[in-house]
Amino acid sequence: MRVDKYLWCVRYFKSRNIATEACKKGAVKVNEASIKPSRDVYPGDNVTVRKNQITYSLEVLDLPKSRLGAKLVDIYRKDTTPASAFEQQDLLKYSKSYYREKGVGRPTKKDRRDITEYIDGEE
Image 1 (cartoon, rainbow, N blue to C red):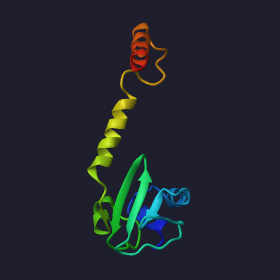
Image 2: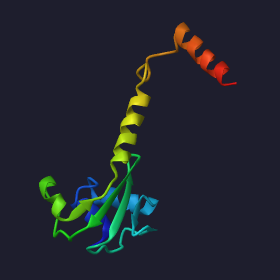
Image 3: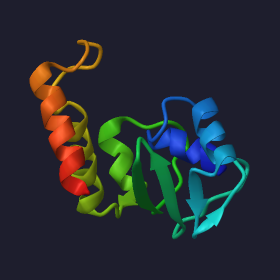
Image 4: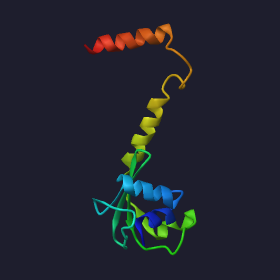
C-alpha cells in the first residue's frame, strides 16, 4: 500500500492530498529515509511523520483495506511517539499565550519597563 494512502487510512491526515503534500515536502520518512508518496509500506516498517511541530513515530502492524474508524486504528499501527514530544507541544502552547492575547494592542508602560529591564539585565 502507498505510504500516503496508509497515513490517510490510519487517520494521520484528513485527506490523501494533504498526505501526499507532506510526503513531497519531506515530513514523512520510512525507516529513516525521505520518500516519495508512491513508496509502498509493509508490516514492520517504521514511519516517522512530522506534523504540527510534533514528530510522530509509528510501526506498521498490518495494512488496512480502506479508511478506518478511529477505534480500529490501533489494530494496524503501533504508536511509538515518546511522551516528551507532547510535553514540548504543551509548553509551546503556554508560552505563546503568556500575557496578552494576539492583536490586543501595544505594550503598556509596565510591559515596556519589564522588557527594558529584561534586555538590560542580559548584558
